[in-house]
Structure formats: structure tokens, C-alpha cells
Image (cartoon, rainbow, N blue to C red):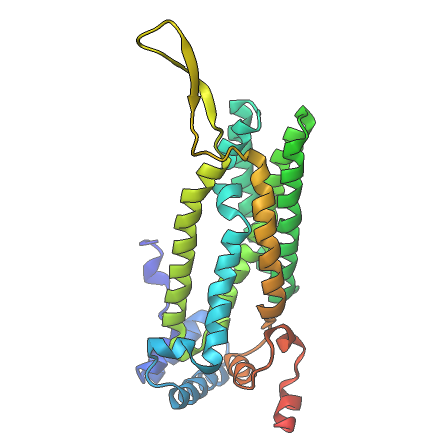
Length: 313
């Protein structure tokens, strides 16, 4: 990151906020290329910031929870909450350990763990093209539905005690990683940058990041307790010749059945995302502000014609 940092241009929005218009123009030129006329883009940034400054008082934290900004904050925080409700910590963070618990040999469990990570990388690469063709809303809601199905299927397969079921269950984790990275793994960050209003973007991003950290901490504490077995081999007594089972009474021993837990949580996230995840593909920041200021329901934003809305107003 340090090597690449000198080549990263400063945000043109930051320069406009500081009234450094020419620096903003040069930054836009670096971002879009020397042959691109950045005048309209610069004018849009200036106009959006001017309108925001009239509506909000210097970007105070309290503004994130007032008026239409509240729904923006809810969306920004909610998309990251959905990532953890879908079971990302279980499926990716503890995949190798889960494969071992499922009875897969250690060497194969490690290989499958690497495969999960590789599929995640492939998913991110695929997302580069589909995010601007399929759109944010369809990908996010579709991804939540897909991961709900995969999690429930993992839970069902854990009840079936066959070698084939174990391998299919492990394969579900690989499929999960692919779906996650194509959909909500990347869409959440795109929505965060688009939903937050420019005047409050830094604070909204801070709130969303804090939410992600809190959920991540909780999941990393809870998931091992849910997945781990209660019995782990046998413990030799130093006093007698007898041995007895090593008991972990605080472990839930759910193993793959934790898929039912995250399947239910994913279903709740799917319902939330249907009502609150907007479609903002090909929208300018000015258009997005207009939609939120006129209290258009998030699930209908992709179908609204701005000109028709202006005529009705």
C-alpha cells in the first residue's frame, strides 16, 4: 500500500470542500484521463456540495440521524450488518476447522480452505463487470437469497451422516464464498460511497466501519463456541491408569448445524435488503440526493424517472 500510495490522486470532493477548484480539476483529470472533459463532473461536484452546505450544518454527527439522513445511515450500516448475518465469519474464517469437524482428512481440509479463498478472489474479479451491468439491488438481494439457501442446505447435510454428504457440505462453503464476493461482499462498499451524502460521508463511513467491527468481534467470539464439539479426545489422568473424555460443556457442538442459525439470520437480512437496498446504478450524486430528499422508498429508486418527479413536484 505504501508503494501505491504516491500514485493515488486526492479526492476531488476534498479539494472542492477546501475551495481548491484547480486542484480538483487536476485530480479529476488524473482519474478520468487527459482527453476527457471534466468540466461537467466538476460543476456537478460544486453544485452538490453547495446544496448540501445549505441543508446541513457543517456535517455534525447528529445530522446522520436526522430527517432523510437517518435512512441513509440505516442503509450504510445495514449492508455491513447483512454481511455478518449471512455467516461470513463462519463460512470463510473457520472453513478449514469446519472441514476437520465434518470428518474430512486434514490435508484435504487445508486444500479446501485454500479453495474457498481462491473462489473468493474469482468472485471479486467477476464482480467488476456485473456490478455495473446487473446493478446493486439485484446483486445484493439475489446474493442474500443465495447465501440463505446455501446455509440452510449446509445445516440439512449435517444431519445426513454419509461421506458424500460431508463433501457436498464442504463444497457448499466454496459456493458460498463465490456468491458472497460477487454480491454483498463488494456491493456493500459501493452502496456506502453512493448512499451517504457528501457532507456527511466521512461520518457515515465511520459509523458503518464501527458497525462492521462490532459485528466482526461478536461473531469471532460466538462462532467457535457454536461450532466446536463438547468432546475432544481423551485426557490421561496423572494419578490413575484411567482416562476420561475431555469435556467442553460451554460448547454448543452444532458443527454444520450452525447453517440453520445463519440461514435464519440471512433470511432476516434478505427481508431487510428487499425494502432498504436501493438501485443507484448510473445515478449521479445529485440525482441520489434528489431521490432521498423527496423520500422515494429505497426499493423504488431504480425505477423512478427524475424528470417525472421534478414535474410532479
